[in-house]
Amino acid sequence: MGTRVLVRADGSLEGSFGSDALDSAARDFAEELMWGTERSELREENGVGLFVDVTAPSPRIFIFGAVDFANALCRIAHASGWRPYVIDPRSRFATPERFPEAEEVVAAWPEEAVGRLGGIDRATYIAILHHDPKLDDAALQVAFESETPYIGAMGSRRAQAKRRDRLLAAGVGEEQLERVCAPIGLDIGALGAEETALSIMAEVVAVRNGHSGGRLSAAKGRIHEAV
Image (cartoon, rainbow, N blue to C red; front, side, top):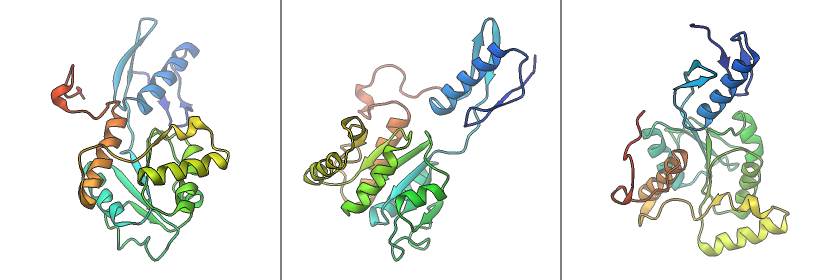
């Protein structure tokens, strides 16, 4: 009673319950709750209660493209308790002064920028907002190599089709392309940067919580999950 084990994000353990079976169960429960519901819960393993106390920083959203929409998305993400980061190799646009509510602004190509920020884990979401094909494709390639649960990309349906053809020609598989939410955001009839950012953030939150993003009036079951 009262014995504790620390399970880190990489799955490593510090301490032991004195049982390989309990240690393994603790790791499995922690992995599930740390990256899934992100909530603390009491679990049971062979009659032993294991309370999994999930402690983690707020989720991150990597915003590729130092455009006006990115500024609005930073504001809404920050207000929602998320940690927004802006990435763009164009140093004249990617400046902290332009994005005061970003946790960090990185003026570098996607692969280098992501390396500086410690990589993309399962609590990092991706929004690709620039309209430059070479920047879009570079950001997508980095996202495809990660475990991110969400990849959203801006652009018209014609732009999406061209992007798809380019990536297929570059050897990207269909299963990877299916991961891309494009056009990015929920269908709320958004106009302007602020409403577009709201549409994007709404889709991101829905994905994080395992919801479809429909209207609450049509939803079944609990409206608000117990925290």
